[in-house]
Amino acid sequence: MITKRKTISEQQSVLHQESEVLYRTMIEAAPVSIMAIRDGRFFSVNPAGCRMLGYSDPDELIGIAVLDIVAPESRE
Image (tube, rainbow, N blue to C red; front, side):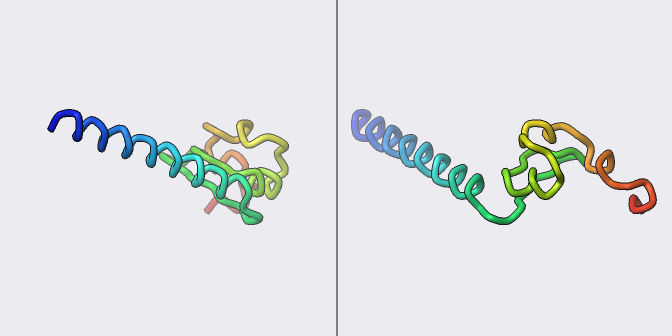
């Protein structure tokens, strides 16, 4: 019984990892901007979102406050 549970758990882990890779690949390859924001800061940005905002690397945006890249007259 324990061996069966362990096998099922290992299979679920592999499926989760494969799912994560597929998700990441789809987001990275998407031709449209996809951005995740948490607490007003960029948490994740795909390459298309990066290009749209004029950055060369998505890591440049991670952690930056969204309002920091918005023109002052447009912040409201």
